[in-house]
Amino acid sequence: MRSLEILKDEDKEALEVARISVDETGKESKKKLYIESYGCQMNFSDSEIVTSILQEQGYATTSQYEEADVILLNTCAIRENAEQKVRNRLKNFTPLKKKKPQVVVGVLGCMAERLKTKFLEEEKIVDVVAGPDSYRDLPNLFSEVDEGQKAINVFLSRDETYADITPVRLNSNGVTAFVSIMRGCDNMCSFCVVPFTRGRERSRDVHSILKECQELHDNNFKEVTLLGQNVDSYKWSSEDGAETVNFAQLLERVALISPELRVRFSTSHPKDITDEVLHTMKKYENICNYIHLPAQSGNSRVLKIMNRTYDREWYLNRIDAIRAILGEECGISHDLIAGFCTETEDEHKDTLSLMEYVKYDYGYMFAYSERPGTPAAKKLEDDIPEDVKKRRLNEIIALQQQHSLARNQMSIGKVQKVLVEGFSKRSDDFLQGRNDQNKVVVFPKLNFQKGDYVNVLIKECTAATLIGEAVV
Image (cartoon, rainbow, N blue to C red; front, top):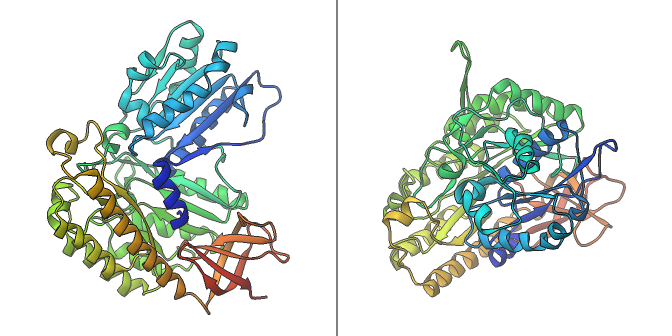
């Protein structure tokens, strides 16, 4: 996932933005597509689906929005200032829209579904608004714009999984790829907008998932990450009921494609992760020894009003199972919210004590901010002062930095198997990749290249990065 250093940048920005930069394709195409993705890995995956749909309609892709005939922003609705970020970005396109009125500007994704007609009414340059389940309809929406109309489709489907669409790997480094295994969410956590923006949970046909993973392996990809809002609740059945596959069984089938294909997954839900999944991970060396297990809080009362459907004792039971089955070296990361509605100082301390018990490798930490339309926004008062939220968040971050450093120090003197993803961010004389526990490892490049598996002796570390030398 992401390092603690990146996490701190995210806290400052409160929104992860990625601009898709790709070479132009399809020289015969008449129209060019430019697309930006904001937020979670699922949005990045969705942008690859959107691009595939539009390439089938003859669109080329461009990394320069000034050259585009269609500009799309695939948006997130999770972070506090996500809406303002998108509105500010839209202002950058206004001069181009004035110069070329025929350019189509669209807002996609979770924010599009949540705000619906608001974007069309308030952002005059926006022509199209499309929710996460309506990407197949984009060509029709563009046709409506060509006829002089604004176009919107935010219908939420109970069965759309885009299983038959092969994503265009725009976000990939050519080594790792995301594979969506399910869409939507049924959990209804009181602070979360996802069930309202992405709809009900549905699992993708297992055979289409295996086909996509096999094709990635055949095209020299070395790692896949299986994506879902709650991967542990994956369950697919054939129409005749003769075949039923749960997440542990899917995980095993993907691992069996090749021992050279690493397998990761995100995100797990504490109420659903089973010992069967953990034993499957232990059985296959190419299933990475890492689990993202959001806690959100360390206090049972707060978890109840969050509607997380587990308590502190249950969460710790799952942590104990991970350590018992996969060992102390299994990487574990978290999501934690500071200052949720009515949280007392003692309940905040319960979160700190949970962190002390688990000693996470890293995590994603946020101060609570109310999301319009969520159960918490409707029923609970956001009653924790901002300065208290900030102080509690800073305490969580400071403790996590201590634990991240301590956990990384455990790797010093050990040899780690690293999948090279590219050059280090600081120097082309060094390569970087990730180890089994999803930690960034940096080492001198020598004669190695992207896509190689390299055994690296860890010699030093920071809280975010392991540093070593290849064992030749």
